[in-house]
Amino acid sequence: MSVGQESDRADGGKPFLRRIHEPIKHFLPSSLDVPAHIHHVAHRMANPPVDRPHSRREFLHILDCLAIRADQADVRERFGFGAKLDEHGDRLIVAWEAHTEYYSYQAWHIPADKTKPLSFGPITYPGYVFPVCPLGIRVNALDIVIQVEGSVTPEHLKPLLPGPHLHASRVFGEDITLATSFTPDDDTRERYHVSGRSGETLRQYAVKLVDTIVAIENYYHLVMLPMQAFSRAVDQIHDYEQRHLYQRAVIMEQMGTATPASLQKWLNALTQDLLQVSRLAESMRYRLSGAFPYDKIVRGNLEALQEQPVPSIRPISEYIRWRITGVADGYQQLLRRIDAMQADFEATVAVIRTQIELRLQEQNLAAQDQNLKLLASVDKTTRSQAILQHTVESLSVIVITYYLSGLGSYIFKALHEMGWLGNATLASAIFVPIAFATSFGLMLIGRKVIYKRMGSGAAHLERNSGS
Figure 1 (cartoon, one colour):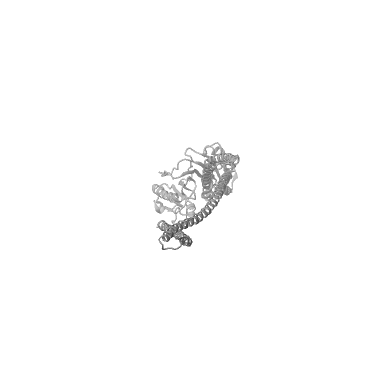
Figure 2 (figure 1 turned 90 degrees about the vertical axis):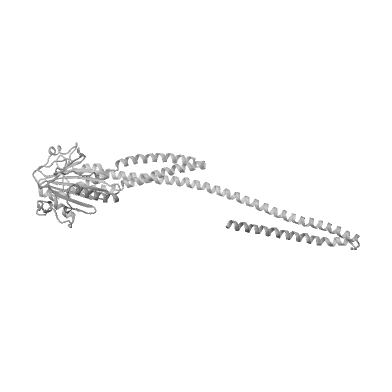
């Protein structure tokens, strides 16, 4: 009989598979039963917007490899499941869920024989093999067994759970015992043993219990995942702090006598360190940003377990709280140290830049003073040249007048000898003012011609430069 034809009602009269238009969160618990053997694995996504759709396609491939038909599966944007039933009545339910930073798979094997004891290790559903290797860093892997048992004792649990320390609690205010050792087995899975006297009670709390265990483990490991990067960053920021203390002491001591080359050398070195610290700050903010809310999620789920002690066994929350206490605070302290180091570098760089700007302003002021002195000297020289020019022009008028007067005297004497002029001396005297006026007129005409040619030449150069 196929899965679609099966009318299994082992969960209290509710059908094993419902129509896919029903809400998944209502459907899935009704499909599960106890005893059950569960494998869970979570992987961190390097680039969630890209990897999340890829994980969905990966899950569709898993359903195809496990020969789970489309009518026995429902895959949404961030959650999906598929189910199948073998010829002996064993059920296999595979679920996928994509979260903000990671995605996870769960495989539930629910045997038809309720009296057969379950054991940790590979899922024994006929022919089941997980067909892919999920992408990204593995956050954690769990091996969970839920079955009806009487009172469990440390002697009964220790052979089942590897590791030196055993932790167990009664949870949800019911007669349900949750036990683990927090130690990976040979398949690198942490084992959780869930037992209770009442199968109905276990069935009622099975999904809630598994979800709580998975949330605690996933987010606990996500909190601890950046620990190695955190340790390296602590060493790096310590080195930067020591280096900056030395740099700042040298700069404070030599600032007054530092040359421009020294200032530029300090500025280059500090800028490089500032860039390195800024890059470290961005990297650690990205790595540690989720640790603070994840820490709260872990603590909230530990409270949701409503633990009650089991005699002679340490409670589960004791181990988790011991491991994560102070971790998120340490991350925050590191980010504060990085921010403070970044601010110190920026302040020192600002001081050096201010010193360089002051030196430049002093140089500019000195250059301006030199220019003013040069302009004053040029102005004085120009005035002297103008006075000299006027003097030369005056002398030139006198000289030209003298030569014109001399030439006129020779002409008047010649005319007197020829009998054409009666008094040559009188004529020479009268010609002197005429010669002066002529000399002065020639000087004015020459000056105008020169200025006109200079103006036309400047206009020609301006037109050429404009073109």
